[in-house]
Length: 438
Picture (cartoon, helix red, strand yellow):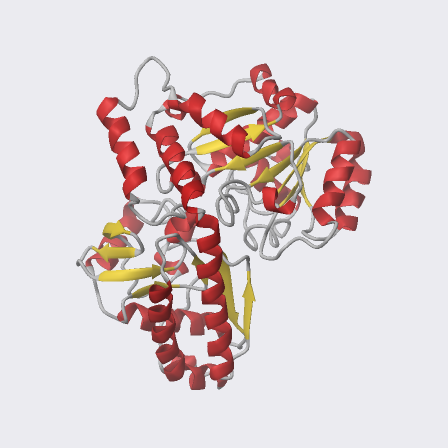
């Protein structure tokens, strides 16, 4: 595998930054342990240039889902530059945060108030604090991935496998106070009976229910509706974590398409199209409980975040970007299916079209996907087992990607089917979960 400046810089980073990067999902080991460029010099649309000025088309996760409009969107960048020009921070408050609250509540008529943070993990912690302050109770029932905070990772105090189906397998809850054991309890997606049994078990101790309305599959008929009915009957706040699903299929929360209204909803990632911004919106009677407790942070008041969010939401809505994301994602999913059939590979495809995942069914599947990423990198594409579509992806880009993948699978499929990928790719396989880097 070719050496590059990114590889060399990452070697240095691993010595002076615990884990090498700030985000597990951006570790080179998650894509291609040997040869991944690791760092970028610039990006625009779907194009990424590495530190050696080599250009790639990004068919991975679009900045970990942050950029639904594409990298360096000119309108969002212009709004941010204007915010910087006028001053990003001072003793007074930025008026954009009031305008943003009005817009978010206009898009989601069931909501009456909004509070802000700058990241998804922070915003989820805020939401949990609010529902606990509102209810005066401690236990949170949850389903899905909700960040790195103590309230969530504490679920693994009950056993290191508790979060296996929600987050990562075998994640140790190191650094989490044992006093939080039993305060976060998971339930299974699309299994209403499992949820009902937990509600019966914990009854009047439940502070709220937090869940992703859509995970790797669409909710079955009656699942979300059943949860909403139970939580309303028992006056349990229902929180939809839209950090990942928001702005994917529409210009707001995906729950609007599903027809189920929560009590609170949380947005981040795509909200600022690459600029840090997060929001918790909800019914006024619950959101007002934020004033019972202390929720406050200096940089939650900067001007750039709300300015970027306003520009993103307005453009996203004007372009009806969600429809384009679905169209592009559907093209990619169909391309994976067609190539699997062409080369006799069993391929499992999951996720809604804008958040697509594919998995080759083979004994050395992970090594096969790593080899594919290596070959596609040589052809000028950043690829993985996941593809998040953006408005900047065009049909012509998808055709170029699938043509390159066609040639790659033509070369590798005989080795994949005979479980002998190691013969042509004698390097480590990409990581599939959390591993300590040594």
